[in-house]
Length: 357
Ligand code: KG4
Ligand code: ZN
Image (cartoon, rainbow, N blue to C red; front, side, top):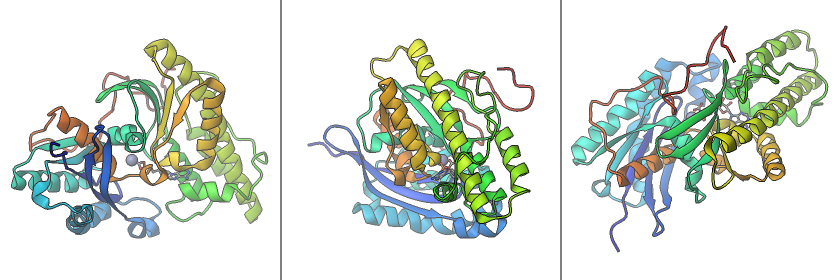
């Protein structure tokens, strides 16, 4: 039996520092030997959001021991690593630069290939860590910075079907949480508070619900939440607003996903109807349940990464690194950190006032 590749993945694009060792089984499926994630919640809590300079400093302080622990926990030796894969974008340049420089330096010192990974591709392929998945499949990527429907046609081959024209869905959760005075990071707390509230109490807007194909918009929703929070007096009203907000998101995603299914079938003509949901917001159980029900109605197979791999992690980066390693897709050591790096480079930039849908 030939030696299986061992890839070190490194992630530092935002506020998680992470290192992971990935290999593969006899069927060529990726296996996670270690995945160490250190979150910076305590660093940013008092500011109510991620402060780039502090995030970068924290990455610098931790990256050494995180990578060392990833290697130790996997049971391999550092010189057995076959390639180093680091997130190169999109994200905060000061943060990306930490994991990118560290990865390049380590690859150079080990005399092994270096692989630059798109963070979004990590999310997009993350379900491969627990399920067999063939291309093409439809992907809903919902994170703190992105909300997109994409046809994943192959490694590095994406076709965007729809995107947000303003805020990302995770951003809408986080901003609503902030307005409700929930401590950072508030997004996941909305789900918890919503359980105690009446989802029909407040009627919130659903921007571009009846136009724009499967494009999304959440900015108007946030403004409506702001107006209501100014009148809220009791905890129960707070729970009701959290529940109403989440219900509105569910209704938007239900309708837009149905449109995305139609577009995927028409434009891509796939052999199998598989629907992958990835990114931090895919951890939301209500969203998962609603999308699973929709898949049942529309005859799609729903696929979610394990909850612990929905947020930012280096396992997904190492896994993309493994796929690229097998195709010998290596990068030079002058590869830059990219703040913007869309998966579908050909898709039009759809953001801001005056966007025509
Ligand atoms: O993918 P991720 O970890 O980081 C980015 O690449 O953006 O996603 C983080 C986002 C945050 O906006 C967070 O509030 C949101 O995912 N999130 C959730 C839940 N868990 C994380 N939003 C709603 N419900 C959740 N349970
Ligand atoms: Zn992410």
